[in-house]
Length: 296
Ligand code: MG
Image 1 (cartoon, rainbow, N blue to C red):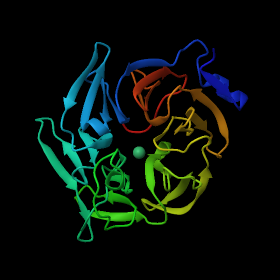
Image 2: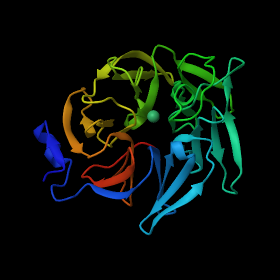
Image 3: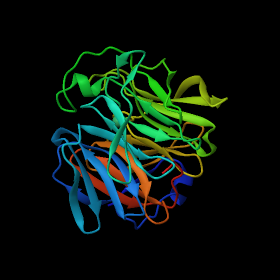
Image 4: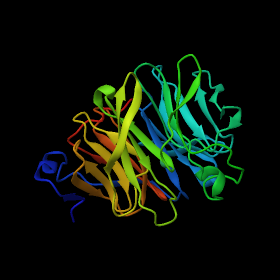
């Protein structure tokens, strides 16, 4: 069987025909937020309904943190520290090297955030995160609470100040910068559990802020949740049938077929060419012929 579906002949050079999509671990309830720690040789990821962050190594899976305050997306900052989105505390947190956890954002305009979902850090050290309502409107991903803010994308300055940088989306979810940070991609999952059209939007970065937002690509089947760029500027996105690779001009290059609904992805491994995939109840990986660029 093939693990890949080629839509553009150029995609043939992006994958290794004999590289399998491996299931690394399974038995979870709903996994998201993979983040690679090459220095520790491990992958951290969230099992949201079970309120825990797990650690995968070649030796197996252990618990990193439980309870995790229903953590979802993760990344690392410029110092390599873990940055996490937490539904349970409606906050973004940083875990320092001594293990202490610091809240870096839990509100805007005097109101509590909804449920921070996904997060990335740019070269200037600012933290960008999405704040849809899923964690407070579904029992499965968190708990129920009153939504007081629209679903927006925020930027936390290195000084700690927070601003809303994207306010024109229904439910911003995954996000990724292009190489060089000239473009910002954000997945809009809309009403995730209904049939509304869902798409990935792209913004040009001007003066360090996203402008000129427009539809970049519509994933089918399913919708985009987690997204990451490779070093050529291709965007890799979660989908219902696997991971889709989309060229910078928005056309579908090809697919990695995964037997479960994919939520999030991240590049890792020694050469940053191993794609880790969280998909429903399992974690998968596949070696690609492309390197990830998204920090970390
Ligand atoms: Mg997400």
